[in-house]
Image (cartoon, rainbow, N blue to C red):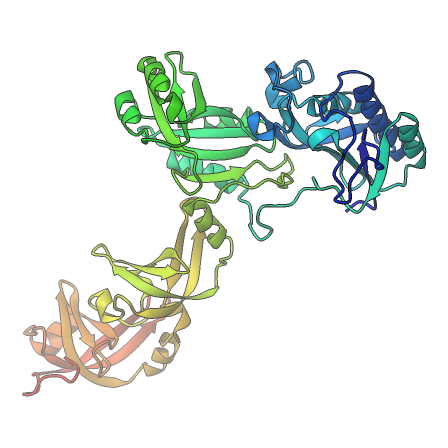
Length: 501
């Protein structure tokens, strides 16, 4: 917060009632003449006294949402001629010389339809408020500028802070940046048979629309206005009648349409204009309807462009979508982190899904247990709370892989101590190159392989699943997690079966 903040007005403080309301005869709109020029001269005097020769545009806004006073907006919102590159030059972070900054102040004094904060970070601010109130903040006292302002017939008053200082909607919200992960997600989401729409909002109430395909993502990316807010939507409907049918009975909606030349535009309308818009859409190539009410018809995901150095300096926030909340949660996860969750699904294709804080993570079959099992349901059940380790966080595909066995003690190092021991166990599986024998007296006991050649010599080749064999543990391959066995003699199953079967 700057230490020296002044409210500059044309209103004499003596003409105020006990509640601070102005009771004088001054009009609350610009005179488009000497008083307006006095305001601009005062702003220039403060900038000179503070050593400021250029200002940064912050949180620019265009249109009816920023109309403060009684004057109607004008074509071009008062920005005509100020930005050679067009309206998109009026973006957050744009640096302008003092002369252009003064013209922006003039536009705001006249309520021409554009508004922004003008700042020199940590040193100077200019805010234009309702009814010709101007707030100037500085890190210096600017005594000469104060004297100049009084001489101009204006009234500077020292205050604690500008009421138009920026304040985030949610100070705890972590804004998703349009960084490398974001663009990788777009590349992954777009496919030859699936295009997406990208809404580029370079100012409040001012957007451009782009259709994203596999071939043009990087081209579109290179042409976006700095610090734009981005929203990714599903593609428009080529069945325009179906889009029209999506219009509600009443309410505020945004109609997005593509003309025959491929130009995509949008218009915000209410029910009083639905009929006119329906007629207009008759010639559209494709169209879509988006509700303007919070929480309805959210995009797939949103982001804000960082600066070229990768730092997100734009202060505005997008409305978080479920996809954005997933991203924010994934950013809190790291490989090796231990999490708890609830098993939601045991899929038929061998993946178990676990809810961790509202996000669905997955566990592949090998990561369920160190020990052998026939089916995942032998190890876990739906509704069971489990503790697992994060193996991988894929920000592009927004996937999290977990491991249950990573938080369990690895029994294999102890198994290596069994080399040379003789054990008796059941035959669990017969394969062309030998048989597998369970070497532990438990249902999920480890198994080892007896090669077919050794088996023939010991048993005459007559071995079936369920027979028991006495074997010697010849080797334990810790890298491949395998036991190598050698038969001692063939046995028949006990009358009451093998314990654990």
